[in-house]
Image 1 (cartoon, rainbow, N blue to C red):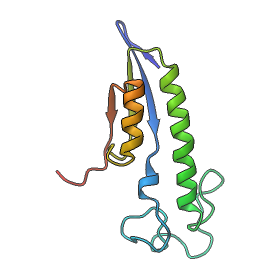
Image 2 (image 1 turned 180 degrees about the vertical axis):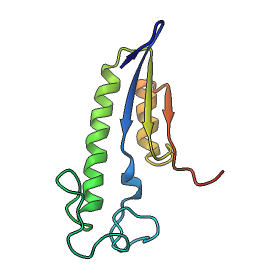
Image 3 (image 1 turned 30 degrees about the vertical axis):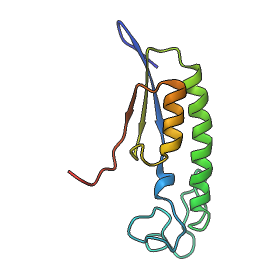
Length: 118
């Protein structure tokens, strides 16, 4: 939470890499879990991430599910004037969840990147 002189904002930072985490053999050019860009054996993100490329998509799905629960709770408890969500992928990724969260909690601003068009 940030309190400014005449209003307050709560920022929620959400990892949306689930939308770029596929099975290792899929889309080698655009896949965090791709076997094309990870070691054949021993690929790991350490103790805080997936332990293998095979487990990678499931790990990101569990993270996304946990974050949705955390975000639902945080937005529901927020008493600031503004609620801002900051994430990587634009809201057409996870569209149904973003629509539901915005309708229920009134997300005031969603900041995203990832656009490859200019």
